[in-house]
Amino acid sequence: MNQFFTAVLQRPTEPVALERYTQALEGIRPFLTASALGDAISLLDLIEEHEDFDNRIADAARDRLGMHGC
Figure: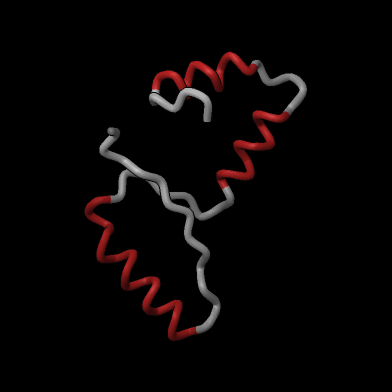
C-alpha cells in the first residue's frame, strides 16, 4: 500500500473549533507533503469532465498510483 493518504477537511467557522482545528494541523505539519486551501477536488473533477480532456491522462495517472478503476 502507498505510504500516503489524502484527507479533505472542512475548516470550522466557530472560534473554539477553529482553534482546535488549527492546533491539530500544526501537530501534523512535519508529516504534510502537500496542501491546498482551495477546493482542489472540484477543480480536478471539472478538468477531467471538460470536453477537451484526454481521458488517457487520468487513466495513466491512476495506473501509476495503483488506483485502477477509481
